[in-house]
Length: 624
Image 1: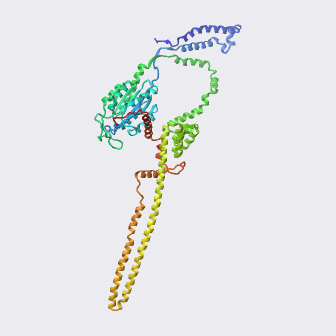
Image 2: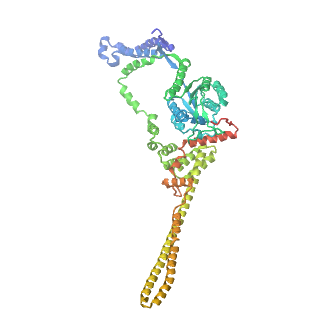
Image 3: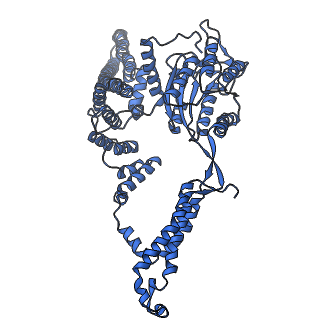
């Protein structure tokens, strides 16, 4: 209580005015009630009731309330409170090294996999502030601007790999320059850069250290790998080799990384198998912010105690107005309020937002009004036709046409989607997402036409094979009939010869000998001729059967054709909106927006081509 004083002492001057005001009002009141002097004092108590019975006692209450109100307005205080001068707004950029050296296997399974896991854990540790994501190899690319949407960042990190980068290498200076630009363009005065890497190449070491020292941001380095190093094994199992054909061993120079971190007023955190490294990185940023807040951004201010005296002021006011309080409550409830009039829309909108956050898109679409927002909810719920009808009701700008194209593509109308993308590109030629989806849908249409042609060719081949098989079976049947007829003739002729021999036994021996000598000369040639003819007629059946089998078996397709046939057999879902009625592979349709790696690869490729045309690219000496 030694520090008791008033924050607004000028209000205390009103206390000096209250006594004079009291005596003046009392004088005026005395002039107005002179009629009471006509009544004897011993009869006033019996004749006066209500407010006139105790005028002095009831007139004291407002003056006490007025004095208490003046004291509250003057702001009495004796306590100090530490409060921040302004809310700390932090920004950070996460740099991920996507060079081929991240495939080194000195950390199981490799450095790249562990870098992804650690980056995901680190993003989850960010409770406040905005974060940007940058991937770099031979050049640096901003995959996500500064945002507080952690879900987007968590979806992007697992799709990153050296294969999707437009150019190999490890251009760290370009990554630092891009991070510096992102933080400055966002208007941050202070921020931090978190570098996840396995080392620097010698050609960029000096430049990167100079950049880190000149930037106003804190640079924290997270190092992966070992000093001994290990070979780099790609995703397909092949080892990364130099141009001379030697296997390259990727080593991590932690001394150089530590020097880089110190130049950026940060620290080096090495890889650990547990989560201690991630906790250390997150704690490092929190400690710096807290120390800065206590020293530069906090101040002690006197706390206004008068606000705690308001309940004391309200109690006597409520007592004085106790008779009028019910009437006042009724009047307040009957007053029209704009908030109440708009409550039906605000309630539905709030419910819709909550449902969208809980991924209950169909229920949210029922609460949203007609328009693009309802179309987005229907699109996410899988009702692409309903989303298309909502998009068509909106504006026919580039974004609206792009949304229509996505809905048409998802519903199976690839030709309509292609036309919508072309209209969007006509209005906005630099619409990268529309250009990518346009190229993808066009490739799907080409593949669909190729599948149709392959199916038609297969059907024709099957028909031809069936016709040849029928002809071969007819020919085989005719050959069997022809082979049976000579055998029957041979049997009949042999029976006739036996009868003639038995009939001629009664003749003379000379005649029998002559006949017997003559008959074998005639019969012996016949039997071999008939058997030989039957064999000659039967032998062609074997090659015909082989030919039939070879014709019945379809030709083995090439690997690309076989894959196309397999996809055509698996894709049995046919959309009614498909004019040709041909099955469309659902997996291919999912690639329109659900394959982040392809989107990132094409986005970075377009950006790199633009930089190359402008002459803003550097040739990397080291390709890993």
